[in-house]
Image (cartoon, helix red, strand yellow):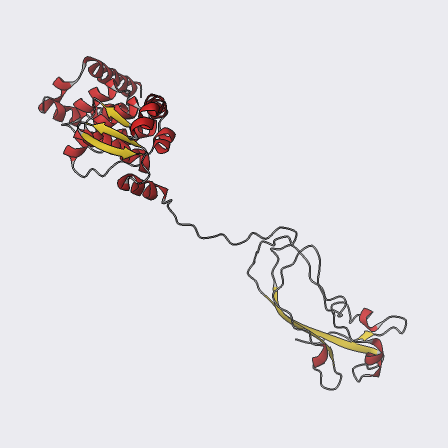
Length: 326
């Protein structure tokens, strides 16, 4: 790179204010400023050129690193003193030469700059991905530790905890409150634990109900026969004790076993127990003519209740009207 023309040093001006021709850059004028998306200077050197050697003075060579340009500029802070320049060999005929070398990265680099006033967010504590409360409560149910109420269902007893039951069902809370008043005197005399008889429910269904109350999940049902036997009874129990989430879980599980052999019975059941999600799934299944033919082949439509058949006809008619309109 060729050196620019020498500049004349005005005695009334400091050395830091001198210029070297129209294109040369002095230490004080060597600044870069601009938006964050401007190219970044990766390295540069600036030095006073010796008239003898023609090389920058090492002590005034200023290395730089990649810069992120903001509204404020930046420049060289290490200036040569006027008296040092006047005594040096770099001043010739009241002039001196400055040479700058720099490399510009042509790619545009951007980086978000966080204001120093912004409070630093501390590192987050690692938390287990899934809560384990349901495991603890499930263990409490299995052990029967600190149980204060006993249910008798179909000849089998189940120990439970009043506070858990009351928190999960408003119906159970009311029943247990009335039971506590009725048995307070008896318990004071005999020391016996309260026993609550449950009628119109099988033991396995009540056990599944307690499993949901303590763990908020359904018991494992791998076989279709197990689900077919238990899920309808659990839906009835959910309606009985006003557990909306339990009913929805049962509906969703029943949809997994929806097929040409079960759709008719499920559609009738859904209408009788206000299972709107299950009902809609059954009707959508029967919108497919192939599924309807399979149901008819298995005499499934004979198991439809009058109200379920009416819903099915209305659904099919609506589908035909929509098809004709398009």
